[in-house]
Image (spheres, rainbow, N blue to C red):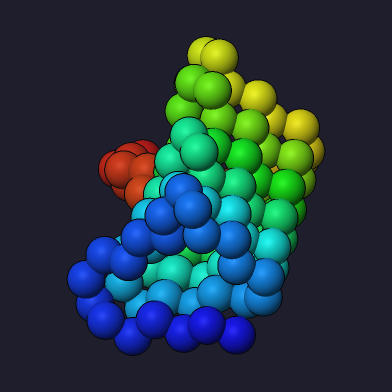
Length: 132
C-alpha cells in the first residue's frame, strides 16, 4: 500500500499505473491508473484518470472513470465522467453528459426516520397561546 503523508497535492501522472491501495492525507489528483482502493481527504479523478477500486474521501470530483463504490461527503460527476458503482454521500451532483450506473445512498449520519423529522418540526413550531 502506498501512503502519501504530505499535506500538499499529490499527482498520479498519466504515465503512472499503480496496483495496490493508495492512501493520501492531502489532496490527490489522479491522471493515471489505480487498481486498488483509494482513500484521501480530497480526490480529483481527471479525464485521463481511472480507478478500479473503492474511493473514500471528503470531496470527490470525477471527470474520468471509476469502477467501484464511492463514499464522500460531497461527490460530483462532471460531464464525461463515468462511475460504475454505488455512491454514498451527503451531496451528489451529476452533470449532464456524465454517466452513473449504480445506486445513490445517503450517508448514515444524514438518514433520519420520519419520527425524528416530525419531532424536529414539532419542537420548532411556535407555541400557541392557551385558550381559557
